[in-house]
Amino acid sequence: MLRTAASPSVSRHPVRVFEAVVAEVRDLGPHFRRITLAGPSLRGFGVPGPTLDLRVKLILPAPGHPLTPPGAPDGTLQPGWYQAWLRQEQPGRGFIRSYTVRAIRQGPGGPHIDIDVVLHDGPAAHAGPGSAWARNVVPGQTAWFVGPDAAAVTAATPLPEAGINWNPGSARHVLLAGDETAVPAIGSILEALPEHLTGNAYLEVPDARGVLPITTRSDVGITWLDRGGGAVPRGRRLEQAVGDAVARNGVGPGTYAWVGAETGTVGALRRCLVGAGLDPRTSEFRGYWSRGKAGSGANGIPLAAT
Ligand SMILES: Cc1cc2nc3c(=O)[nH]c(=O)nc-3n(C[C@H](O)[C@H](O)[C@H](O)COP(=O)(O)OP(=O)(O)OC[C@H]3O[C@@H](n4cnc5c(N)ncnc54)[C@H](O)[C@@H]3O)c2cc1C
Image (cartoon, rainbow, N blue to C red; front, side):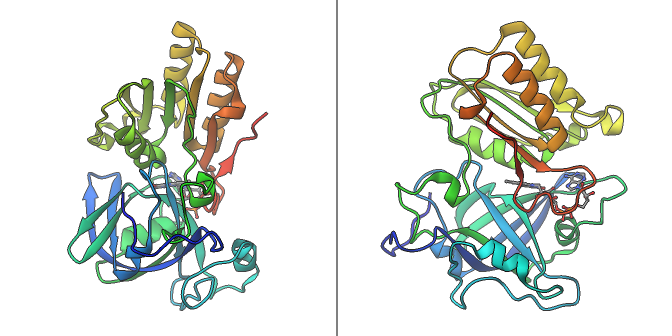
């Protein structure tokens, strides 16, 4: 956990724009690229607690065009900033895509933030600005993103306003399920879980080379599922694994579920779990991207809590 010396202020918007520098680019096998961000402004970044599934919104320039980041010159934002950003003209507006803070740690010269970006494959592999950025970025480049303003986020700030959706309340049993885009979030959550929590985490990746080291103190079992390099359709193994677990054990009262994946997969898992008795109002179902739909990863698609 990182805090700043600045004193919290309730009047400030909980998120702001940070201007960072790309400190390192490193491949974690063929499916993930770890991009490490640093810079003095990151001293003002953070939440009062573990980052869990904390997302940041990268603001990416349109190729060949200077970016006009949203907000005031000092990076502060006001409520409604996103709608105002949407009203800006392209190409100056650029693109927004959400990514998870996989880790925040002290590095040379101050805080460093790791973001693990999926090098997605398929016909649209190079189409998206997020994907293109990850493939081409080099150390020394500037990166802008919206994230929690440590001087504004207090223990009283609702976590979703800072970018954290993990909220198990008093649940003692959890079920996590995600595809590769949610591996950073599930990894970060698992590493923060307390010992007394039980449950299961299912992570679907393109093939065995997508399995990354994740540890947890908790009693949550980690199951990696791979699509055999395309032999199995996306989401199929996740749906099977969760379906089998539900058929074997049902969904115990007080279970908290957290699901992040392609939107269609999230819908299928939600139907399965809610059909088995899970209360969707106290669980988290979020489409991290939608097949064939550019920009769906700007905010994610929350699946209705009904
Ligand atoms: C809260 C949140 C946290 C996220 N955290 C991460 C993270 O830590 N790491 C990460 O890599 N992603 C993460 N994502 C997902 C990421 O934002 C999306 O995958 C995003 O669409 C990528 O943007 P893009 O510009 O590459 O593609 P877009 O311009 O959005 O889409 C272009 C095309 O690529 C397709 N596409 C998008 N993503 C994928 C994919 N993963 N595989 C195959 N096809 C795809 C789209 O369907 C579309 O056809 C997160 C999303 C949310 C909502």
